[in-house]
Picture 1 (tube, rainbow, N blue to C red):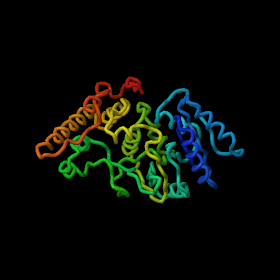
Picture 2: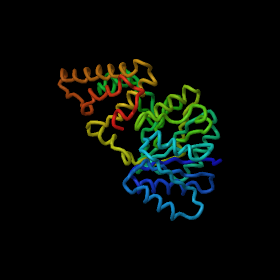
Picture 3: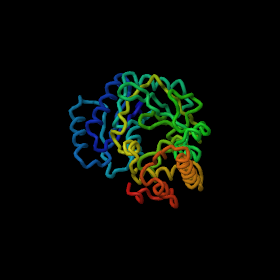
Picture 4: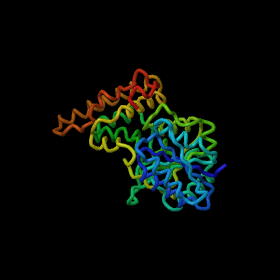
Length: 319
């Protein structure tokens, strides 16, 4: 059994994936670790590029390649990576990320110091060293109202429901953390199971943290362990959201699934009603001579995706 196994998904990002693997190998020196790269059926030649690069590594390099028969999404890909090798800890790591020197020694030391933590979240930085927001509260109808309103008074009233936390967060504030880079304890995995493959992309990390916390595990923030996430490198949603363009159906399907699983049968309906209430507040800004902050294109329609079958087949959304 290894001390740590690192799971990395490649989907048409050969150069980034290789850079990510190399950063891990550089920092694993002296640690019993192994890197599992899961190619999510890229179909663009990137898996062959990665396979050739691995072949050129010195004999005994702790890297293996899993070729998924389908594009199984974030959860499915990492479940394959985690299932490929036995370990005491598993690092889920985006292909558009790297780890800084000293990462593994810091995060594994923290894991030994905090045995009650099932998940350990590092400091995730931009490439110029600025901390990214990577720790959060759970989404709720109140946070959906804030998101819809995009209004200062509403945000101040509902500040305790703001999803994004100021960095560094207080330990008691963290309800979920980004799975762009996170360490999972194998004992927790054995108890609560793998990631939910009903999610294709987005919100699977929120649900998993919800499940972990329901089972009594907590999340520890480890600022001494530093990684870099080149945001948007392996997916389009962040860029689309910044430009207020239409988000893919799988994003809203995952949102619907999350509110059903974490807020009950009426969760998706309450979240949508709260968002619409926020949009009404946003439109009232015109009475004060202010512009109405835009939502994402078609969002008023798209938030209803899968609302009648929130736990249904994700393929219904085109994922």
